[in-house]
Image (cartoon, rainbow, N blue to C red; front, top):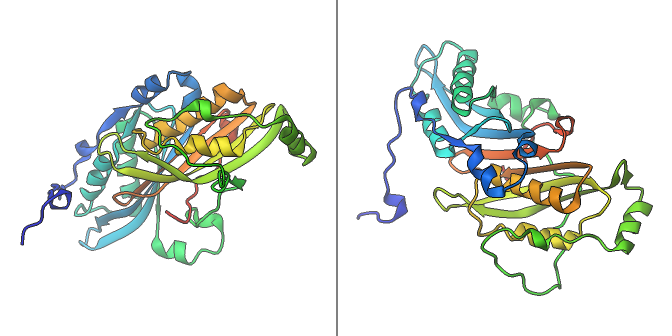
Length: 298
């Protein structure tokens, strides 16, 4: 019996160490499409988790680990995710003298690909399962703030849009804004709002495969954003073709232009494809950058 369709397509996986498999994509392409201040989109990090990392000891015994890569948003390039998977697979039958040698090799290769220093961490599986607190760095976390996934219940049918629409973002009414102030959410420069949604969906611009994620926003501004309008805006990404990093930067740019926030953080935790998840975070000031984390769907 023959197999047809995409499941029958054959991908050639390298069996020897091949750093040239890594494929770089200019960040400028996505930022030019946004058409906003590129320097403000370059403050933050992209954290990648790879769950299918393996190599050989000098004795020829397979090793496995979970990896985290930290790529600065100021890097001129991102790495194409499938090329990263192929690169990691090229390590499967490569011998290394130590875990540190693996870290050093991946650090060198990824840094050369994206054009900026990349941090690499390897986590032992036992260290994760036996951990009792956040010191392991990969325990499951929970977003902070208000989940807005039910904010549109009873409001009528939500239209499917081809691309994100920033005009959907609406401010709070004066009554609701005063309610926030009376709830002691006043911060320097305005009121603080923290939202998250598990309903972020976009499409890979290369393969058109769907990407699902959780989006979190922490904003201080003189105007507040209406939760229902924010959810409508997030849902407008459902048919949008954009890399994870570009989608987060588009949200950051749209909120910045609409609400002129004094402080802003936008981050997303995308579910994994091919054993890799990508988690971009953009902040209005580097001191607002949170620690990396992962969520229950990761």
